[in-house]
Structures are given as structure tokens and as C-alpha cells.
Length: 136
Image (cartoon, rainbow, N blue to C red; front, top):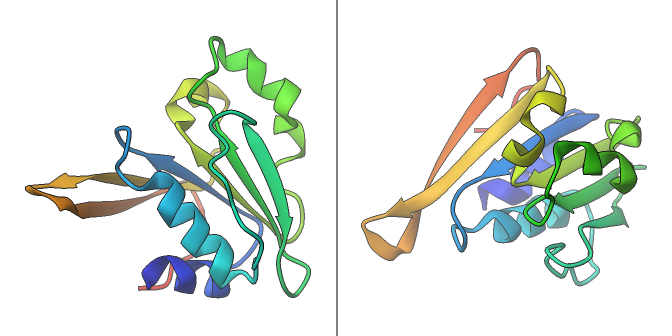
């Protein structure tokens, strides 16, 4: 799966914004990226807890954050926003548009959406700034 290759091969640190409507597969993709980075723990959706951190292999840390419930962009600071992007970190942020002005200049925005059949998803990856290469 492509998500697992991203987690295993991408250079860190990296910030990946996961965009798309409810149910488009943002958390599913986040779990696949984390598995590729060596996370074997169960990964619940961060919708209610807002942020989870996991240790992967080779010193990688995976931070999975969900901004859906934020009312104001400045609320991200309470979630440890200033610490995102540390050495060895893969930051996976669902609903990044809730803090658009605070997003890092170098990142990937991955857009997920339904494609006709409700079981199919379209994925479009957009490099912003000087983010590291994604595996193909």
C-alpha cells in the first residue's frame, strides 16, 4: 500500500496535511503511514483526543492530530503545535485547513475524496514549499 511506503521511505521531519470530507479515509491513510514507519500499536482516530504520539522504528516519532473540533486556529498551540516538526518526526494532521495560516511553509497536502463508487477514493498529493519527496 502506498501509505505504508510513505511511512517507511519518506525523509523526516515531514508535515503531511490530510484533507477531505468526513469519511474520505484520512485516518485510514494516517494509520497506513504509521504502520510503514514501524508503529504496531492500535491507532484510534484522534477526533476526540485531538492528538496521539507513537514511536516507530529508527527513532521516528509519528504525531497524529485532528483539528476538526477546533473553534479557533490559535487552539493548536495547546496541542503542542510548536513542537511539531522535530527531528525524526512524521506529523500527520487531519483537517489542517482549521489552522491554515499556521501551517508550515514546507509540507505535503494530501487531498482525499470519493470517486464515483462510495468504496473508491481519489488521492492527490500537493507539495508545498520544499517538502521531501514522496515515494511513488
